[in-house]
Image 1 (cartoon, each protein chain N blue to C red):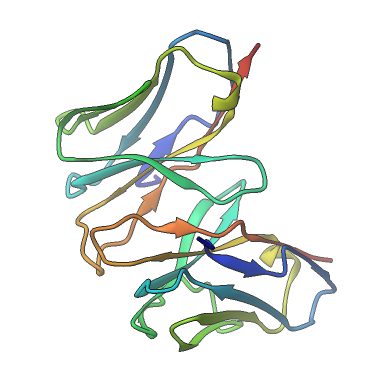
Image 2: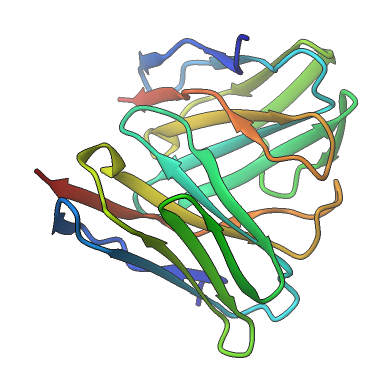
Length: 113
Length: 113
């Protein structure tokens, strides 16, 4: 079983819809949770990161962490065609140089105009 | 401001040949990471350096893979001899300190025939 599970999609929604992307994990030691966005033929770029449980909002993006369920989510409001990309969840036990980041396999998202 | 620079962007070579991938991290960043991305396994950490010293190479698949960082502005990942199963996109990333996010290059797309 993988440490981090993510539905690969593809997920296709109309412009303006609310998008929900999710990951589950098995290691209760994970404390830092991240979402990366990866456009085609580009490297991943960090969208958001959160520490422990709770919500974090940044513009149209909201990240949620539920440590009791080992479940994290990324919500995108008022989705735009420019949001079409692969979204990778990632997590680590800490933020020290010794802590590896474990990535999900990514969900491919397409926003239809 | 230049990001992480990787070369070549694409490499196609025959099985058994030596392959060298190159990375120039962002100036001033102290840590450098090599990742491999495939459809089957997602994004996997191969090795990372802190202040030019290899810290964790447990992700390096086997002895055919080696990585060096002779100075703060250059790193190489070498595969010798290459095999078809090494075909993947290889990413380099760097970060300034452990509490800051990693910045990824645009990757090298490697195909071993």
